[in-house]
Image: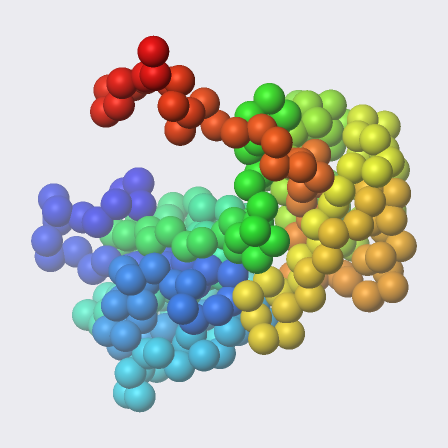
Length: 264
């Protein structure tokens, strides 16, 4: 399966891998909420997901915390419950397609003849931009958003090294990078001006959210002052300093398209 609901094997069990979004329960998609509310087994990343979201599952639902489990243990539990005919929801923080070991889980479930439906979730970069009231793609300034991370233990392909990404000077959203913030700042300063705004978001949309914008040259010191090592997102972007003087051509009176004639 490619993450889509199965229609060719109606007798095969199917597991839903569901994105819980950045944290706030009301930022779940309707589909995600409905699946959680109908779950008979909920395997959830309790170290990263708001407990209020897990609480949406029925009282009789078996809730399995996965923060202390290996991927193999999670897969074994998922397969066992799915083969028993139970409605299994594997709940991920954010969007399962970003840094969520989605590929390994789909492959493991496919090997067990279990289909998978993937339900997307709102990602932290979107929640952060919304909380700031900022657009990350400003006409004439920046039109590209890059989602990436510092190398760390996992590493990144050489073609995606931070130096190459920073050279674009796009809106750069960095996940899983707070532990390496000094090295990240040093590399970014080779490409972005020192006064480039950096949004630092900790547990965005949670009750204890902390969110600020600082110059790039203060990115590391601010992170260390707050002792940020996890659940932190950085958005490095000239768009955060845009004065609002540019506008999209799409909505300009002089621009014509299929649904609107242009001014003459």
